[in-house]
Image 1 (cartoon, helix red, strand yellow):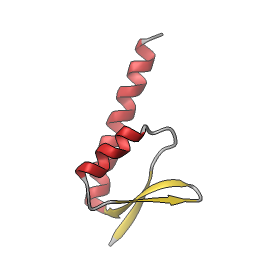
Image 2 (cartoon, one colour):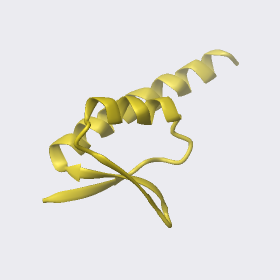
Image 3 (cartoon, helix red, strand yellow):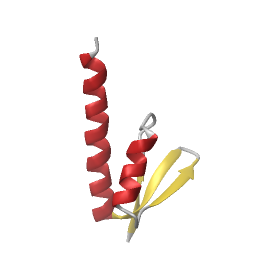
Image 4 (cartoon, one colour):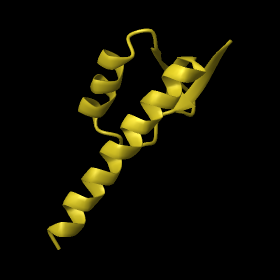
Length: 66
């Protein structure tokens, strides 16, 4: 069974590219509600981990510059 994972708005393109490179079975789809990844649950869970880690690193970088 395949599922969708909404990509948070503001996610850098290079982070999405990293996910797509690692999980080449996933599809990137554009919906009315923004971009989503479509694929198997196991792959989406791994993609979610990469996205969360990348966004947290970016937030830390920005907060360290204050």
